[in-house]
Length: 507
Image (cartoon, rainbow, N blue to C red; front, side):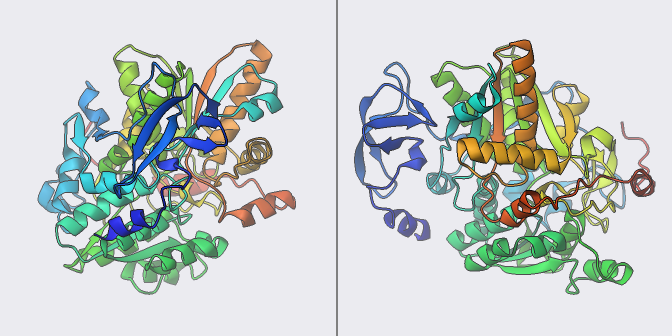
């Protein structure tokens, strides 16, 4: 099996990130918390046994990879509005989605089941990097002189450097299981595209990616990363598709957008029988797969005796934010905890804080189903901020729904403040964040400084969804003083919102 050879390539003396146990000399860590030691054995997926010391207290159990994904819809008394067929405006049927997705993902998209079993083949690959560490940012706390306790769930330890493989692996698995030969997708910053390329390399599928032109130019090493894993990469808009050619005719220098790139990938999938489409965010099944983040984090926080007062995550399409927050929303609905849950978006693309809650297309060309979501209008093209993964005109329908229900709140922050926070984080904690989670870092710093002023010892939990090793040109811009705070134009949004389809008879 292809995945087995990858595991065998790792000798048993490696740093055991896949167990969240870090061994350095005589110290043992869960995240960055030294805890009591207990003898244990770790069985690697290649059959080796490695003797190590437990990173957990004697009265705690080892943190394991969740064996099920969690579906928040099952616990909502008010269900989210259904997606609609773009021509009939009737609720989408499974057969409407079959040209784009394999059967199992279509089932997951519409399911009301509370938990979905994770296939063993997917779990086996997850073990390359999961569980991911929960780390206390003690040095950042000291820098800010705050009584708050700051924790971050770090997804940058995955092979692609972000949370995206959590859904790329199962999506490719289900496509391979159905006999699909090729998958296509869009990507903004390149984290999703590289994650899908990684997953395809493990299962032997062809992978073709349309990368938003602004990010394609800003982040050449993400393109090379995708190509290293065997993917074909095109700048979007491209002259390969009808959707791309139309955009280029109107604006030959278009910086592109995720909506445009989605249109191009969907067009290719819909016109080739051996090809399916994969999406890195927004849809229910994508958010479902990402809940491994929050499920792990709940167990990790329980193991150290902490309960979050505030949970913060960046939002573009919403998968990283949903992945951390949805299991905590479940616990909140059951009355076990009561954290404030805060989404953070860029001021240049503020779909939650400035958009409208309405049915709209997920792509620019209007090829996708209509989804009830917070949107800036499907042909809104955000300014080319450095957080390319957050340049999406809409928000995941399920996140939009829970936002309308009042379970989460939202703020927007300009990119200079975000990068200022990223520099503080990097120079205290050592990790260089991707531009996307800098928004969560900036919001965390705001709250930590409030705690310094009020004396509140809040527990802040932050989603740190990826590293910024391929985003250093963004840091160069900031450090040289050349970064500009881009913001949306009111007229531009009004013009875009005027083109949202008018759907009648749906609440």
